[in-house]
Image (tube, rainbow, N blue to C red; front, side):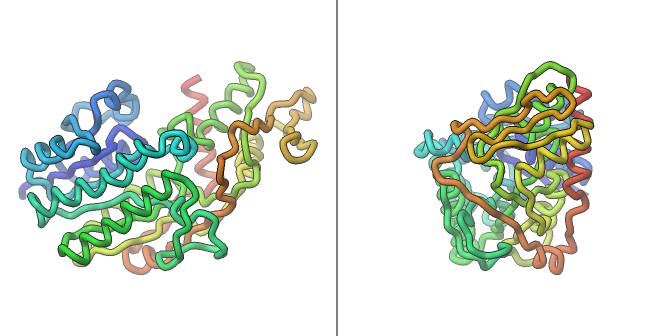
Length: 338
C-alpha cells in the first residue's frame, strides 16, 4: 500500500514535533515545512529521535511562491497547518506580521489547495483564544468569538477562511479549536514551561525567584501529545467539520504554581494583594514568586474552559492526561535537563 504524504507547517514547534512522531508511527511520509531560521534549533525533533525520518523543506506562509512550489513538488494527501506567530503577548507589538503569518498565511495555503490539490485534506490549528472574554461557563463549537489580541483576531480570520473553503469550494477543510496544551516540548516563553523551569531552578538553587503577571487567569490545560492524535482523527472522517479539543476543566495560573511547588516539595505561602502579592518559601521565608506588571497583557482574557463533547461523540476522543500528571511529566523532564 502506498504511503500517505503529509505536510506539517510549523513542524519544528511543540505540536508539529509530536504530530510528526505520531504520523511516522502511522507509516506516513512526513514533510516538515518551516522557515530555514526555525530549523536552526531543531531540539524537539532530536529529543523525539525523528530528525532522520522527516523530510525538511523550506516553507514560508508569507510567500505564496514557496507554498506553490511545495504543493507542486509533492502530491500531499493531508496538510496540517500548525505554523503561526503563536505567542499572544508578542502579537500586540507585531500585529501586522502576526496577521500575515497566522491569518493570511492560512488563506494562501487554502487557495493553493483549491488550485493544485483539491482532493487534499486540510487541518487548521484554531485556538481557544478566539473566544476572548466570553461570558459562558464553557465554550463549544457554537460559542461566539470575541478575540482580544491580534493573534486571536488572526486566528478567527483563518478559522472562517477554512470554513468558507469547505462550504464554497468543497475542500475537505476542518479546524481544531484547541485549548491550552502543554508538554516538555513547550517553548520557554509560554507560562506553564516558564513556571516549571523557573521553579525547578529555584529548587536546585540556580534561581532566586519566578516573575509572573496575572495569577488569576484560568485556562483549560491538556497534554499536547494527547491532542495531536485528534488532529489526525479529524482528517479520517468522510465529512469535514470543526471540533473543540479540551479537558472541560479550568485552573488558575496560581493553582498551577501551587501544584508545581507541591510536586517539588516546596512549601509555599502567599502574602499581599494585587501586584504586591508574593509567594514565599515557608522553609526559608524567602520570596520565590513575584508579580511583575510587564507580564500583564494589554487586554486580558480571564477564563477559558472547553467542552469537548462533540469530539467525544463523533471522534471517540477524550483527554487521557489530567493536570497533575501533566505537571509531573513536565517537571520530571525539566529536572533531567538541569
